[in-house]
Amino acid sequence: MATTNVVKFYFLINPGPLKMRQYMALAFQAARTQNLHPKAILTRYMLSLFSFLQRMLISLSESSGIHDTTMISGRVRKDPKGLHLTLRFKDATQLMTGTHATCHAYVKNKRDNMVEDVSHSEQKPDETKKAGGDPVWPNSFVFQIDVAYGHVPGEAEVARLLDSGL
Image (tube, rainbow, N blue to C red; front, side):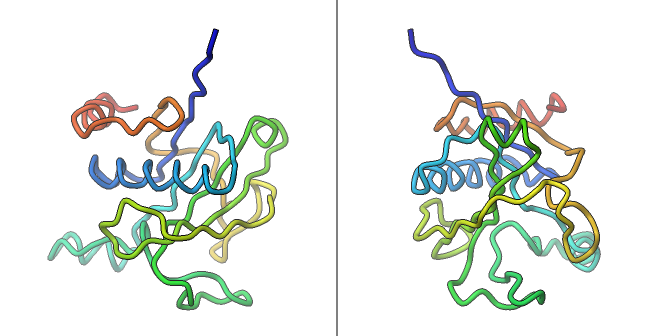
């Protein structure tokens, strides 16, 4: 009898149903290209204070999500490979050991649902700190959605899950 591999998607803020579906599709493609078997996926999606204030005033787009910067030699720099979504993956072993692997899923543009290329880092402890001092895999999340591996829920299903507070 076949079993379903359930994947927990974690989001630090609510990106909305369309972006959430896009990020899930990109994450599954990135996992397949790297032969990963994730049990948990964290998408890097957050607003800077400046971007938050802009959004409140004139509804500009987010500073993370699909973006073109990365850390090079300890400093934020333009990523020479271009636009990407930063994803953090955990397989069953990493869930038990408190580690994760990070990858960049590169795309042609911010609306793209197809991965062009993927870079993958070695695994790190979850408590590894970002430049601002926060752990790269936080202890709490605003949204968590459980889906079958490879399944991207429809927009209405994602909206229902968001409305239910999951």
